[in-house]
Image (cartoon, rainbow, N blue to C red; front, side):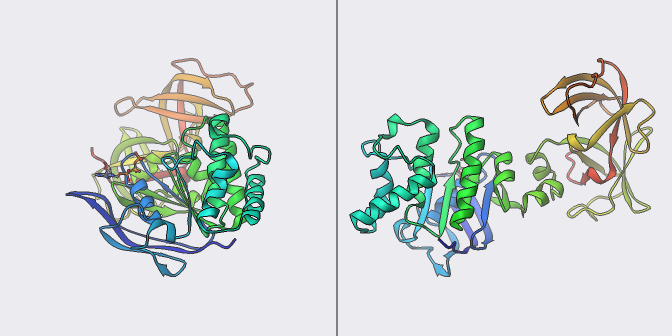
Length: 369
Ligand SMILES: Nc1ncnc2c1ncn2[C@@H]1O[C@H](COP(=O)(O)OP(=O)(O)OP(=O)(O)O)[C@@H](O)[C@H]1O
């Protein structure tokens, strides 16, 4: 199977006076795995259902494989779909469910059986052909839904929270299966999720949506390491935020004062920040928990944030320390330090320095201060 490129050209959808999706443009190359990620109500499902053809856009065009499909009915778009509301037919067996799209396309019976067999192998359910959906676990039902979506070898696959109903362990193994399947098939996948970890693991690129708009588009690493707004920084991964006064660009570092003796250097240039704050403005400093270190009070070096241990807990592959700052309003900073479980943890109240590695820091001007 060869994927098709998908071009979403200034697509918009309004319900009455409410804008669900506002002029979103996305160019998705053939074979890409693109996730649409965003909080509830950000317009993800509306965008996907317009690509599928179940909703008609109020504005813009959708081009799939060079064809303008904007006004085409869903069945003529040749798209595979795994939607939660597009459940398996309960009265049909697994094999009949998977054969359904082939039947719709007038494919002969013996060829259907062969293709169904292959699809079942791909989703690793070769022995389940004669079962009915209610005789399957939730994860198996999802795999059948995936098999039904890929059996006619569509160049584009749309998935809307396909793993939402599954427990964490099963979801993680299905994520890898779907990803491997997509790589084998070469299909272009557009995958809606509100689970940021899922988007980070599975995607070639992520489109982060907020209030019907594209907040940022990039590879998982770009989105994680260089969020262009406090919204994206907060939404993807864990993030600490501290508010302080912007002191300006001092010797190549954007500098911020968090307390009387607490001045922090951050890297010189950030997309989205430069020129957006004046000296004296209140700005937000974003610190990833895993880019922070801990030292005894006074031993933290240049970019040290003095505080006291509130709690230290073992969290599997890392220790999680909650540190209450000795400056500002006594905010809590989460510090994540990898561990083998043998290290002694800090007692509550221990004065420490949180070490904020300069290159791991990001500044945002949009302090609501
Ligand atoms: N049929 C409709 N009529 C009116 N408003 C709608 C309709 N469908 C969606 N909306 C509104 O459009 C906005 C976007 O909804 P959408 O379902 O696309 O968000 P979402 O990001 O998929 O959210 P979720 O993660 O909760 O599914 C919401 O404010 C929603 O209330």
